[in-house]
Image 1: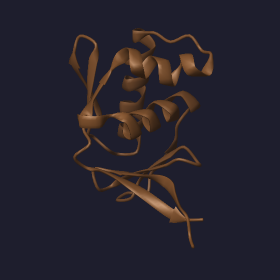
Image 2: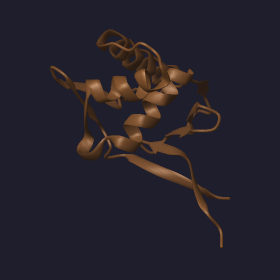
Image 3: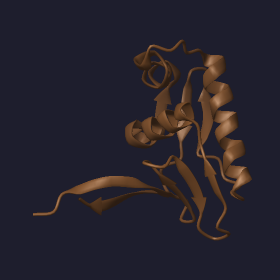
Image 4: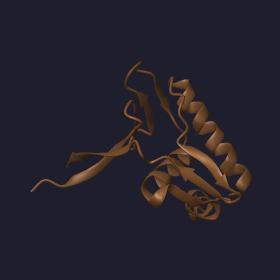
Length: 120
């Protein structure tokens, strides 16, 4: 019996994120951008844990930095979001996946996020 493994995500229909290679791929224009380990942990955490689309900044900081024995802060979180948005732009994609919602909460736009699986 085949086992299904999470391969990545399709964001907004035209942008793919592949977990194993840490790549953002715009399927319309073919542009590819490999992202850093920190941005990959951030992206994977928000895509798999943002129930209802909202996440508290302390939860993100813990799971992206502190869990890996790294120092995390709201400033680092903000810089990671800005940098990821720039990566989206670099592959020709103009939508923002993460936006600031309240003082310590972020909104994750999950309406157009789909999980992609492969058989292993």
